[in-house]
Length: 208
Image (tube, rainbow, N blue to C red):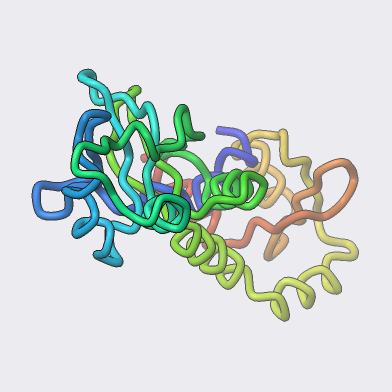
């Protein structure tokens, strides 16, 4: 395992933060569904948006409560025969459970939308809100205590250094040879993180 892969495992991923589609909380509809039937569903805060899926459960669109409000602002009424395809955003951006929260957050910020449909193996599985993605990113940031991080940087002079592209076996050998309490991890000659003794213990246990 490379050191960068170990650090990637510790980062917040969409899988821990998205709302999963279940029978209790259905988060999808079909292109031909009536908008009037969707209004009550979209009024639930848990279901402020619905993925629009095809017969293969692949995401082909997304419809939100805001879409309905904008339509009513223009047309003043929701016609009885109005179907979801008239309001939905077609071919929306999608994410995967394995995606990092920060990457999902960037997609939503850059696209100026608040809900990202999530697919696994090309099938719809749930929706990630921009708030949930932000919480995931915040938890990741808080995990790296800034004060402690800066203190370690100030103590890193004279400590062994290793490139993030090196393997964890290289890190084991470096610590064993140097007897150092931690190893500075560098990327492009800049310190980006640290491998502490508990990191090395975790890595050792994973090998057993």
